[in-house]
Length: 91
Image (cartoon, rainbow, N blue to C red):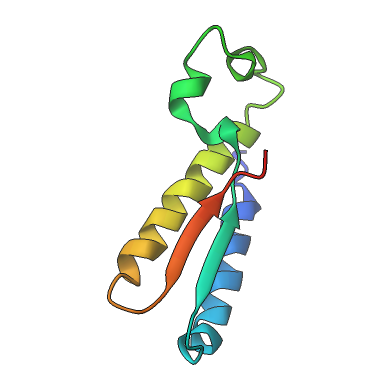
């Protein structure tokens, strides 16, 4: 049985639940916490420690890459609104 990461659904559920309130704000912001592990360039570089962490980080790296993609999708969807939408890597 394949398990779908619930973290993606959590981000979608919370973001969608907050959109009505955010739309009433004069300066709405969405900030998703990402990671350098989401970088496909870094993950494919054999000299990078992240590339050698698999399979221990097999779920973490793609889930953060998916979060970045989701952030871009929200930015595209809300492009004509006054939203600022970003992903930040606090490293």
